[in-house]
Image 1 (cartoon, one colour):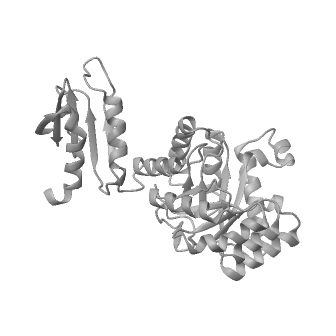
Image 2: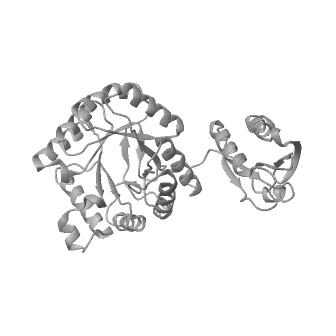
Image 3: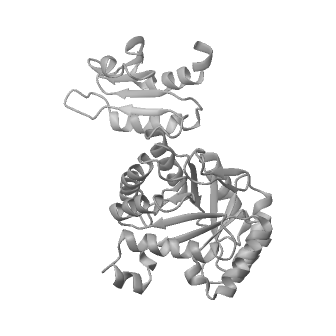
Length: 353
């Protein structure tokens, strides 16, 4: 997975592209002009692991609110603009670290130029976004439908418009809710540009279905070394997007840190509420900053052997709980004490090594 081929782009105090770590983005779902609610949500997302946050800017009140929001947050802020070029300019004047536009719906070249001029003066990168749902009619006719080839051509046309105006501090985003089409589009565009790519499966769906589609799509794309920053788009709490993005990156070996839970599927030998226990462990370890693998097993017979690959694990059944390290049982406790015992071990992990 060679991630060194794209240019570097600075967004606030963060850098994407050029082999830098893949950064996680999300988007607020508050009213941007409600500064208090928006700041509160951004702080929650930052705590969860969000690296860059995007806010919708549907009106001038929202654009002006960005200035106050910026004072109270610690991660870069991207302004999401549709149609009105004046909002893009106002957002940059009020401290946006990046703007997201589709030049196709901003209007005339004069209006696009006005946006590009301000971005150039301030050194603010522009994310050029194209979604399959907004593909131009002529490209749909040319390719006989919405296709990966059409999405790429549309995006590169927009990039060329801005580059012809003397500005190339750009990030490209091409998205589709069709996972395989989206993956194919990224493969094609990676061969034709060295601008960094913002990757995601748009309108992926609910937390359940959206997670599956995003994991498959982002997995295919990122495994090929394509993608410099990602967003998992879910119909749900934005914090779920961050949790999923972190897990996808960790699974692909693109991010370290955080406790990984492995747990066995239930079977006829299970004598403990394993599903509930695994959920409890997953929630319990969220605030523990260790890079470990924790096993949760439902059988005291096979549990220790199955947990050998984990740093630490627990197994339970019929009222008895075992604490296991590298496959060796180190403590036997009551089943009701198992969760607390594991947490204590994790909190004291560094002192025990």
